[in-house]
Structure formats: C-alpha cells, structure tokens
Amino acid sequence: MSDSTSTAPDDNALMDALWPLVAERGWNGFTFPELAERSGIGLPELRERVPTKFHLLRLHSRLVDKVVLADAALNAGGAPRDRIFDTLMRRIDALQPHRAGLIRFGREMRHDPLLSLALAPVLAASMAWMLEAARINACGVTGMLRVKGLSAVWIATLRAWEQDESMDLGSTMAALDRALDKAERVAHTLRLDAGDAPPPPAPAPEVVT
Image (cartoon, rainbow, N blue to C red; front, side, top):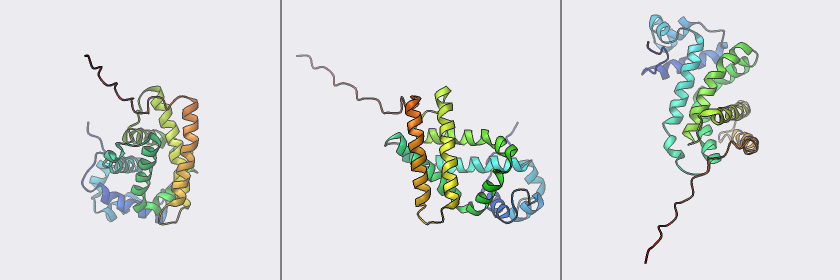
C-alpha cells in the first residue's frame, strides 16, 4: 500500500499554497477547494495525496526533515552540542519561508489539545531524525529519552522564533542555546550523553626490536 504523503515534485508548491492560507484564515478557516485552486493541484489528486488536513502536517514535517537531512554531511565533526545547535538552526531556516502561517498555526494549536496530542508522534519522528543528522544515536530507551529532551528544546526554540523579528535570528539562537544548556544538564544527570564523545585513538603499535 502506498504512502499518501510520499514526496511528489509539486509538494513544495502545495506547501507554498497552504501556509499563506493558514496565515490569512487560520488552520480551520480554509477549505480543500481553496487549497487546490491556489496550488494548481486538481481536487481529486489532492484528495489522494492528503486525505485529511492532518496529512498536510505530516507532509510538511517530512519535507522540512528532508531539507535538513540534505545538509547532514555538514555535521561530520565538532562536539555533539554544536552539531545539534547547527541542525536545529537549519530547521528554523527551513521554516522561514512560511513563517507567518506557521506562527498562526502554532498559536492556534496551543488551544487545541487533541491536535497537539496527534502531532506528538510526528514531532518525535522528526526529532529522532534530527538527532541522527547530528550523529547522535536515537535508538533504544536512551534514544527515546533523547528524543523527548530534544522535542522540549525544539518547542522552546519555536516559542522564541515566534517573537524574533530580527534578520539574524539572534534571539532564537540565544533561546536555543539556553534550552540546550538545560538539556545538557539533564542528559548528564541521566547519563544520556554517554557514548557521544568520539572514541579515543588506537594505541600506536608496539615496535619489536
């Protein structure tokens, strides 16, 4: 069975149509015919690809993940904290083109606990991939706890981003830095940072004379 949110060439066009609609009318204020008209996608095809509005959110999350993962090679070196910082800031950069719609959606979502609950697994999946992009293991019980911690860091960063009108996103970066400070302290207490450091170099071979 095919995944209805699999990536198609015009998925970006769909997102480019979606978020201005959300900015104008709110998440519950627009209709699928309006989205079809703005995106240039026929209504029958739109129904096949995104059966519900929730599928639009899943698709958007996957597209943002792909943008960040495309540059995952940039995280080959450096400390784990630096790699996480760079990864999440690249994620923020990927959100910037749809800022107005995403901010309105985020504010509305905070008054919709059922939608927030439904999105929790989507957020967790994205944060697991962000950890992996930063070369940090997201598997097992330790990985699950790391995902929960990174989800909290990401939410705090998004709250700051909502208020940050600067060009350099300085307030957002400062908030991310503070959130990572807190997460690091918790991770150290729970020993979740074990195994993140690079292995020590192998000893030099003994010379036999």
